[in-house]
Amino acid sequence: MSPDTTGPHAAPLSVEDATILALEAGNVRGHTCKVIVLAEPRGVDELRERVAARLGREPLLRMRLADGDPPTWEPAGELDVAGLVHDAGRAPADAFETRVGELMATPLPRDRPLWALDVLALDDGRTALAWRIHHALADGMTTMRMVRSVLMDDGDGERSAGAAGPPSVAGSAPTTSKATAVGAPAGGTSAVPARSRLAPLRGALRLPAALLRELSPHASLHALDAEPGAARAVALAGFPLERAKRIAHSQPERATVNDVVLTAVAGGIRRWLGELGEHARSLRVKVPVSLHHPGDGEGNRDSFLCVDVPLDHDDPVERLRAVAAETRERKARRDADSVDSFFRDLAHLSSSLERHAEHWARSPRVFGLNVSNVPGPRGALSVLGAPVASLHSLAEIAHRHALRVAVVSAGDRLGFGLCADADAIGSPAPIAAGIEAELRVLSDATGVSGR
Image (cartoon, rainbow, N blue to C red):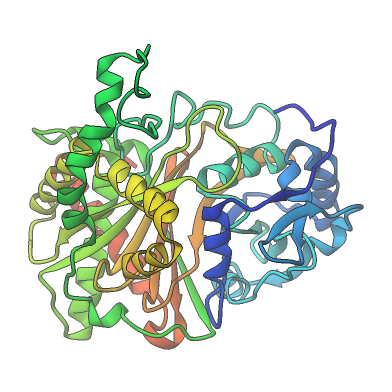
């Protein structure tokens, strides 16, 4: 990405970005976090120099919130990089997740750009970077681009999983732009092909069934349904990306890496519930789907699917096949597009109705766990010449959702990041360990070997 030569300009937040900003209230924070562990020591002064030299590549990072209603982004002026890139001191290598949990619980100040990079020296010679970026400023795909262009060494990660077209966390078909009218103006002849003119009608016919599948009430998972407390606990897990691909490709019918991810997360939850003496037949998982197109502007552009993941299958391969079958159906029926159209049209019709619908869509009666999966840069990665040992993503919990799972594929690994309400469920470390155990079982059961 070439450096910005014009500088940032004041601009209103999009409707989606403003909605996300408004969700930050009480004990719920609004930021996500990328945790990058470098295999070698690097100092905070080096990181400050790198960030200062490259901020021009990402003008959004030089914006702050302006006072007023509606909220607006405005240029932050001359930036104090030392106030944004922090020296977080030293920590034992086996305890830095605790420090990251403390950062996740700390809100970003709104009088400066809504991001912060904390540099933590680990006692085994590695360096952990925790980069918090407010979700109203950037969605998952945009954040990964920022990490690549501002932190990574030039040339690293130029081949990205999402580079060939619009990314989809759940692997849905590429989306198409939506027309605002069904037919041509009265008395005129439309130059739009008949197939394009019929697309909105087909979308309208799909809508009732899509809403029934995606927004119908389901029993909430009691262990995760809690009012948010102030403390956060974090746990990280990982697995070789190529092995996850081979597990998916081993199935007789089409399965994706994201199906493998959902299967493993469900297995980790199943093991954890068993330790608590609780049991559930299924877990309804909300899977964000990116609707970004090449050439889209900045900001958030997402929809979602809700997938019923079985928890009563002892065999994880059977669970994978059930998950893959359901996601194939949802993608074939283009549910993510239908849900997106519904909320956008409702916003034009009635802001009050749209608020009620959004509130319902965030209810634990609709889903029990949010699992996002974002493609990141491929190949060998480094920061200031230090190899990236691991990269993970974290996302904040929500009202009555005490756990959030974020996944990123970077380099040659899948990185799982679990953020939990420490008061409600304690440490998510047992769930993270269960996810890794489920992936190993899947690997053995499907005959996939390797490191």
